[in-house]
Image (cartoon, rainbow, N blue to C red; front, side, top):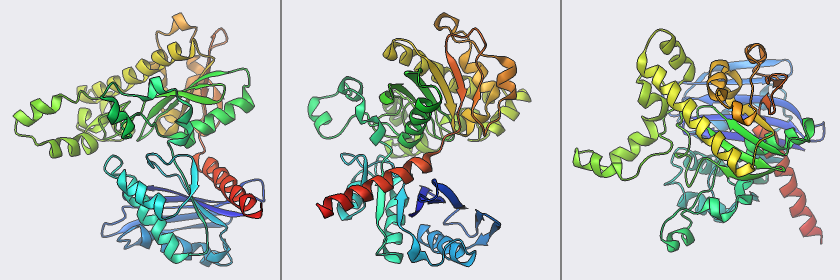
Length: 399
């Protein structure tokens, strides 16, 4: 079966095309960014195909239309109708979790939670409707990022708020489920003795997950992707009553929330960029605020690692994935320092030599904890979830 897995941001569209009948081979991958601006860049890579260009893409529907056409023109697809399904790395479905067929109920529920996932839910809803209009006979599956975290016990899901709020759905959901699930699955294959794993998904959006016997038991994000670690432009953990001080200074709650969601995190502290590469370069040049941004980020990661050692009653492996996790050699060193009491010892040479795009061990020979650089594969997880949903639907229909 040919499955296109879509990964969307507010101004971006990325995808991978899998052939699940050929050992989950990736037939093609493509991207478009700066959607909605005057000129958008797009690219397509496949076996013997490397195409890119610019185009006016006013919305996600236009980006989807362009890429479907390019897949046919490049000979990757005989026709767009040959797609077996479209899978989405969807973010927030509130009470709807797991992987489910996209229907009007799913779209309406995602819209209800768009206020707490404003950068994610609207583009996914738009894309799902666009695919539905262009390919009405092709099933769509939403694999929600919250699904992997459904095994977290209620004592780590519930906020200390009036209980009726909890019943309204105000609780910790957790995100990056596909990435954390991939690491849990992969670690079971390559290190089956590592039953207690702390995975650090570090990138433009970051979260930490405590994994026990392949299941999520704690994660740093909460009701929204805004919480937990500092993000590239999002605040992370924040004292809500600080809004009173901001209001008194003439900053409205609406403006404060907007700035907390787009102008905070690494960007807010450094004042330089939301990209860790730019921040590290500025810090190396002596910029104090950039160094502070790195330090705050590293300390937040250390905080959650320490907390999750307590949750897991120790740790067998700590993994680093995501763009920053896989590339951030200096950051990994800063995060893993002073964990000697827990038996964590980094091999500085192995850390420096680690390939960002390959699975690498970076722990010292006498370390009591395995340390891994482990590239994630969120799209593969979504493709597998999509197949499982369609097979379950077929079996139910046949029965």
